[in-house]
Amino acid sequence: MKKLQMPFRIWVLIPIFFVLGIIGCSPQILALPSHIHTVGVAVFQNQTSRYGLETELTSDIIQQFQVDGRLSVVSPSKADLLVKGRILYYSRDPILYNTTNNLVLQYRLVFTYDVEAIDQTDGRSLFEEKNQMGTIFYYTNNEPGAITQTQDQAENQLMQETAQIIVHKILLGY
Image (cartoon, rainbow, N blue to C red; front, side, top):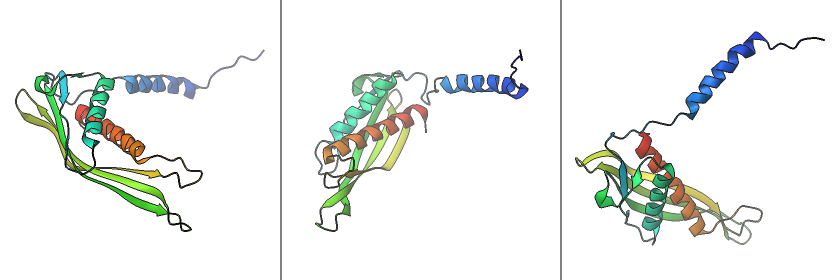
């Protein structure tokens, strides 16, 4: 009976992959000062005519902080870190038309926002981005076979994705 042996290369690669796996599973380091333990999110200002964007984005940011769990979410007045922002611009633009009946098949939603995270112990801005843009494309029910969304569904998805990006950048610094 022949004894099966692994080649030498495999024995070298197994510990390397094990170490890389352990490193990849380690928690990421916060880019915030060590005295920051709580976060408060002020309702974003909405400078557009689209009602409800500020509420949706604010609640999605709060939810992302809660899901992450590294900072406790408290009221903005009691927080170590205050997150605030403004929605500056919003548009819904038709992108694709049906050439037969001229119905819109696809729209693009675009919004622009400012966001800032302030250390409330000393009033210093720890993170600030201006004129950031969020964009999403969605198909209407006029496009047969496409995965369709309503405008509200596309907006909700856009706000959720933007909230994930904002929280990630505030916590990790990039």
